[in-house]
Image (cartoon, rainbow, N blue to C red; front, side, top):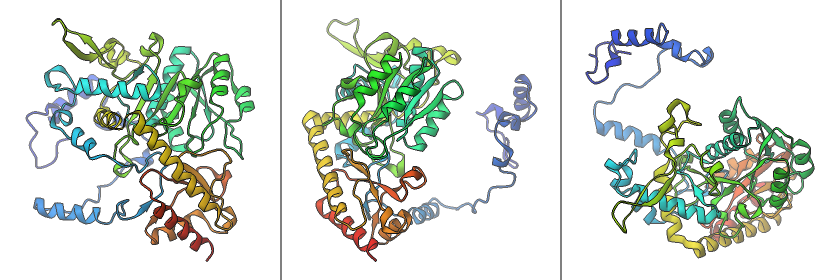
Length: 466
């Protein structure tokens, strides 16, 4: 809408009120508010926004913003044991050095007229992730793991022509809401029970819920609650017997020591690249991936871009470009399977740099280090009276559920007192998984030293014994 006191901008024609009216008439609407009829009235702002006065200079604005930022409690100043989908890993300096190069930061669309190696870097990223997950085809990244999972499920539904997905009940409720949002109303999401002692998927419940309408079974390994899902092969086998597709979500940092899901029957693998050289960025450093076998029925259902290598007209010369471009919404427009827009390609490049730096041996050492440190933390927490270091009996990777039910204190109380000691405690699960009671999801990675873990254990011991 034109702003009172300001002239219409010469390069934005729809700011002209007459042009705006003409456009509204063309689509059968009376005013701009009609474009947002689907938004409930109670969510609409009825009055003016309470904005502060404008700052007259750039310096004053910068000082104001820095003052706000200075109130944050960061992981640089505090010891962090939070994970739950955004984990604190070490980021090698070379990752930032490469992804901040101008040709990658400014090559928005990645088309030939401004591609300065970005096609090749994304091809290399895809190749490295494909090797990590033991699959053949990997996409240009989605926004995050949740979108990758949701898109994988939609792919499975189109392939099978079915409209239900079974999802392991240990999934994070935030991720589940995103999946439901992407899949509604065509695909129904059904949760499968998990064992209260081990956390493992209840195979009997899975078998009872499988039907001729099941498009896919989705589970994560490690699970959101940190333990390793031991029945992956059996879950995939049951899914396949029912004519469904097996989809596995993975923590990419675990694949140096855990079998890739293809080994236990996965048809589609998805996950998040954030552990691979990407900063947490206040929870926003997310970047999802999808991987499949090189089979046409899977490849043609990828909505996102795929980059390949091919010979050019010059003998001995190769180029990089889109594979099966005609399946994307760029080519099909409104007929596309899913809309493909801005994605996290720069973070894909970052993950490619990280994997090329680490190599197979480095990823193995990373996984071993994380697992050893997390097991040490569990063992030490078990020594605290009325605290159980790992609520589930299954082996955990880097995250584990700490049981505080016998302490007489809530996780919220414990976390507040930890914060006063400069420690970010684990994620409170009392609302996400009320059946677990006062339990918290703790995360230990390669950045935590023995001294860090001992400091946490000592602080919790002091708090629960007060």
